[in-house]
Amino acid sequence: MVSRRWKTSILLLGMMSVLTGCFGEKQVLEPLDEGKGKLKVTYYSEKSFYRDYGNYFNIKFPDIEVEVISTAETDMEELLDKQKPDVVLLSEHMFETYAQQGKLYALDDIIAQEKFDLEGYMPGLIDMIRTKGRGKLYGLTPYFYNEVIYYNRD
Image (cartoon, rainbow, N blue to C red; front, side, top):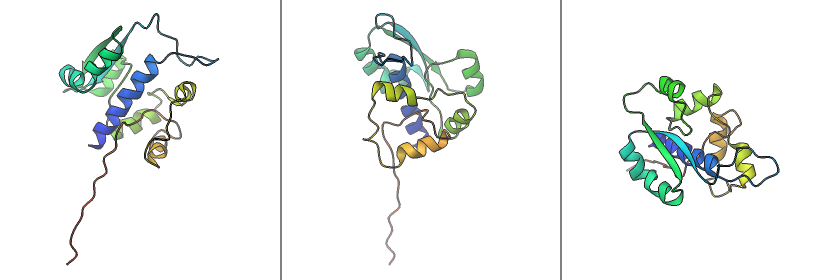
């Protein structure tokens, strides 16, 4: 559950970072040419990507082509080097490792430029994600699972 949370957050924020228009004085990303473009996304499979996100994404951004790169039975390190995807789904451990190795794009400037509101997230969650990136934000999660065990002491 934890790895799916990280994967989802990276996917959503990565897509947001690529697709958002640049309205500030200093552009962090180049604006898309007439809203058209292409994204390379890693996901378990193309079918599950479109079921979970792709169909909704295509409705909102019909002029953006999405190429889904399956991560099933693939060495992630090799996939990243060879395919150079725009948006990646990573386990929590891989997220932390790649962030610390400088293989992920820090989203802090994009979040500031687009005035993306982080206040709606669970208290402490953004700080926890920043900790994994040594103070920088490399991804977000759209939901958070918290599991507890209840028991009867008697």
